Image (cartoon, rainbow, N blue to C red; front, side, top):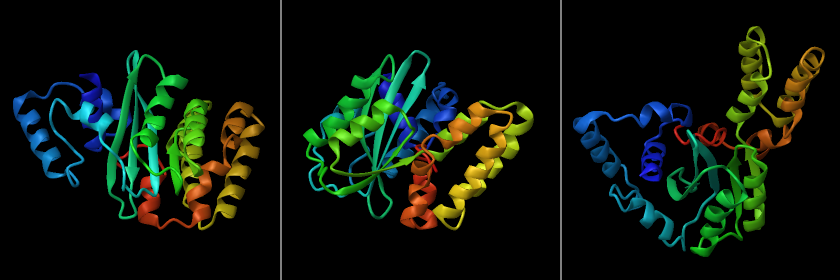
Length: 242
């Protein structure tokens, strides 16, 4: 039941930071409206709004599905973690691919749904961009499965990791400067702005500076690739509503 709720909320475009609110019961009218909306938005039968949706999702063959990007994230519900994988094709259509539920985001939990994509027929030999949150186990899992892979680190996760290490008075301006850098006209300019910020933070908050520098290059992959702004907006974050 938890997995099905997580799947429905994520596919409906609910940000992971609002899941707790989204999982509260909303009455029969709200439930009926949500079911109606999800069925109307289903792309080519990929969105089954029934109690068997999760089982069907995990067994559906993926042969012939041509993806340019893969988004994987761990969503936390109290003591539970759900790893969710979404695929994106060249037209920007999102396809739910897998959802695995467990007690923690460990290596097995993140590996099983990724290896399952290959077992279910997804072509893992083509180039693909994977949008990840920076978890090492998840990064290792996708590298082991996909032959031609580029990883775009979730910019939202990176911003949160950095500002969590700062006092309140510095958080807003740091977040603004990071967002400005991520929207720079080139990866080179963005890297220069982020490195300047890291040098400034390093004088008084070395932990935040180190967090900013860690994986910096992978947060700028969409800039290096010259991804168009509309698609880049989706690929900046593992939150599928962006």
